Image 1 (spheres, rainbow, N blue to C red):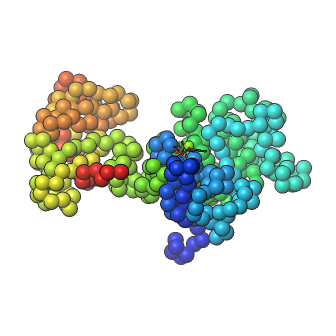
Image 2: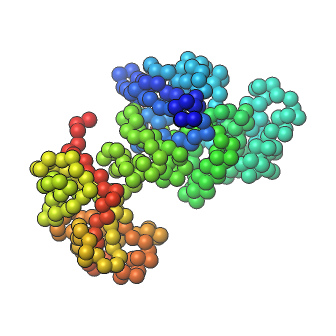
Image 3: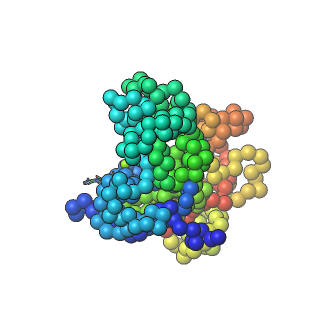
Amino acid sequence: MSPDSIVAALQLERIHKAFGSFVALQSIDLAIHPGEMVCFVGPSGCGKTTLLRVIAGLEAQTSGRVIQNGRDVSHAPPAARDYGIVFQSYALFPNLTIAANIAYGLVNRRKGRAEIAARVAELLALVGLPDAGPKYPGQLSGGQQQRIALARALATAPSLLLLDEPLSALDAKVRERLRGEIRALQRRLKVTTIMVTHDQEEALSMSDRVVVMRHGAIEQIGSPQDVYERPATPFVADFLGKVNVLQGVAVGAGRYRVGQADLELPVDGFAVGDPVRIYLRPEDRHIEGDLTQLPNRLSGRVDHIEYLGTVCMAEVACAQLGQPMVVSMSLNQLHDLGIREGGDLTFALRTDRVRVFGEPAAR
Ligand SMILES: Nc1ncnc2c1ncn2[C@@H]1O[C@H](COP(=O)(O)OP(=O)(O)O)[C@@H](O)[C@H]1O
Ligand SMILES: [Mg+2]
């Protein structure tokens, strides 16, 4: 069966949202497959939350359609849509026990006492807090509260899970652990999930597909590998991870001049004299072994090393380029190659993932 013949779990058609004269969402088209985990990622204010709220029916779109499992819910109130939602702030009811918090949606649906108790126990076990039922939210850590919020969102076994920056308020360590836990849970339950985040690492590490948003529009949709290794636009390249932007000029087929350096890059499509911006990530370089036979060899003084632990970033003042370039290396390479601030570093550009863009279109 081709993906097209499967009914989308969620289909957005030309969603447009204006707040007065301000356009928050412009013509969003998106189909999400059953069981898929999709992240909406983009800078603050780009419309992620607004789009999630439109999907949830918490915000009315100005125009466009929301179709869930083949059913048009564009004008259905939240309660008539089938989803569970988790927000950034824990939003648990502080005066209810954890068990009562999780049971909330089930009580509303008039389930029997025994059935509710069994379901609550099942959900507590699912999120790894089997004994938390009698406690109150204030007695739990932030990470534990978000697990409970997740259990509450899953209580009615919705076909769609919506998460709005659920990890943003947590410490780095807890955040990382919960990333893995949420993803594992999502895979196990096969629940179609949309998570909003402004954190590129979160988006890359958790998603089947990443939706990169900017100014209320979708800039690129793709797998984490697509958007990181083959960014469609300068914005995507820049937003997801670190990138060196080299200002240059096309001087022939696959040939570019940056400062005094002539670079050979496996990219065509520019006329001689066209100004270009060449995007290379810090890891797009060779630094070990015999580099003498490699094209695009450069060298310069290491001005600064950003020490990040596992990976380190060296800023190299590259006279040939006429601009500095950030080169990454593992901690072991840093030591083994004797790379230090004030020393020289020779490297060759690794060009298999290079992106070359023309001058920016006005936007
Ligand atoms: N109720 C509202 N009234 C007016 N403007 C709003 C409202 N909600 C959101 N906005 C604006 O819409 C834009 C997108 O907001 P939002 O979706 O919250 O962004 P994100 O979640 O990506 O940070 C922002 O510029 C925000 O100020
Ligand atoms: Mg938001």
